[in-house]
Image: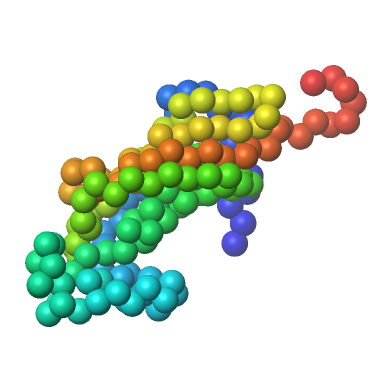
Length: 149
């Protein structure tokens, strides 16, 4: 499947933003545990989770954070960009059934270096659960080789 190329660095400006949404399911958590190897019982075992401060199972933080990758890799800047860094500050738990919305907003564009910085926020049913910043490498618009750009 080809999504085509996303935005080029010349197309980007501060304030541009994109989002994705996802409702967390039991299957999502189980599949993420299998893929990542993170089988911490707080994610997988109701009885164990009942004894924690959350009182029920929670989703993996990095599963939630992966939604930033979805936004950045498929929407803004989109296909062709390369992750350089991502910070994540976990603000609250994510439970099965929560509606997640991950939004990434451009804060800075460096045309010379071909980099774009983003503020990243993920909410669960409207409450912030994950915030951070991302730095992406974004390619320049191809030229036709004539020198008439």
